[in-house]
Length: 305
Figure 1 (cartoon, one colour):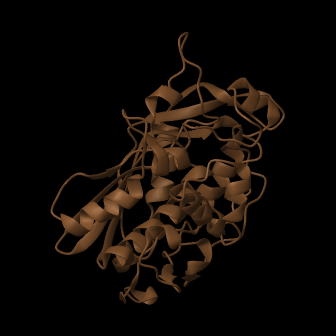
Figure 2 (cartoon, rainbow, N blue to C red; figure 1 turned 30 degrees about the vertical axis):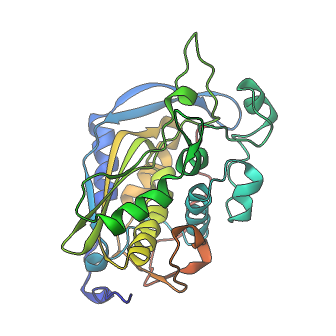
């Protein structure tokens, strides 16, 4: 299908990203993080539970690629990551085939051994396993994306077009259970809804590093909405983002200040250059970004490991 974006010159800059950051700084609570920095040092976070809901009308005002800094160098890796997970990827090697190389810090020999996993394995509780091989009571696996596409095509009016990345038996850690995932899924609770022949998508996120993770999540889920709309022959409408625990790492604050000082530009256009009938066939190079006029790159932003 062909969709008409509102002309770039008519779009208005979207301030929801900086508003979210300000809300965290104003109302968030400083707390000890379970993550460490790249040197193994403990770091604090500023956490805001129940962040404001953010809404993006894709065709009306562009796709939510932040413009306060240039992400043109890595947005495709984020898209590749999500489609790798949709195809069941759960190892660093599998992710790299889709163009995503940033999991190396989380699948080290020490981190994997701690959970009884082979080096490079994200674990059976990871996104790829949940999306494509969700365990069932009879011992078989359930492919969520394959079945949800089928359901939407057959019963578009339903309100149950829902996907979950969470497998409790592998993600809950207590005295009786050993966590079987290197990082418990942070994003990926997805609710699709067809209204007036348009496809909307709510992505609920358990935990979000707003300075680093959020920008990748916006890119990859915008791409997913477009790919799903094309697969279903519907028009993409709204991408709605709901975050439970939105946080900033305390050692990110110098970069936070720089982001807030920068000018916000209008969102760009994301289009499909290759179209597929199977959602699993999409890859990062099937998408092209235009009308993107961001501020300069910002490097060195620390991330929790």
